[in-house]
Image (cartoon, rainbow, N blue to C red; front, side):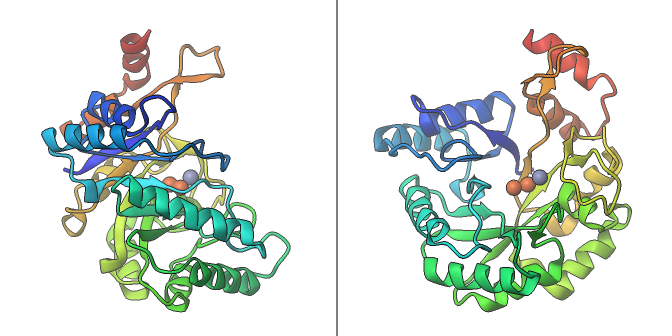
Length: 293
Ligand code: FE
Ligand code: FE
Ligand code: ZN
């Protein structure tokens, strides 16, 4: 089982910190942002830390090809500005310097443009970024606001327009919110295969959703605590056709108590345990609080 979660990438320890965090959750892979997800301030990569991290990964059988980097979600390739293009070029260099091979990217939001213009900009901008040694994975989106990439057809259109190979990252919360019924995942996967092609699928974001199907909201929920439900998520995680694809949790942190609105404790150690046991833990939130307090 190739499973892990989003982990931090902090100034002092960089990739060493990320790997150690992933191992502390019992993960066999992980995903990180090269800085804060919501801004584009990035520090230079320390090659000594990277070397040390790769050694730890090697010792723990974490395959670098299963590790995912996520681009910051504020860069918008659907808009008409060169900033996103320049940033993405730099980001791809950082990813490569870190020895990583896959970068997940939110396609973009059309904002005041039409959907067609937005998609055309994404294609043109990705062509401007150009081919690198890193595979860009377009993430399937919830369709919140004017987000593009909320249908398999939109993703396919971008793939077809770009003059180098791309991959896809399927996010379970997002496709639920976009209107795909995960009670019948085989049908969704068949549709994905027919429209895009299963061989494009390189990463799965495993999240439950706070909202009902077609809500176009994008609010992640802990595994088994949302509208998708534990059994449906287990069915996806253990699906025969998805065996060798990394599964990444991006579920919300748990607050220290019911009265606190702050999300402080990472749920991943306990969610991964629940997934490996294939048994729902209805005391998950308390187990997490008790462990970290
Ligand atoms: Fe994402
Ligand atoms: Fe995601
Ligand atoms: Zn999301």
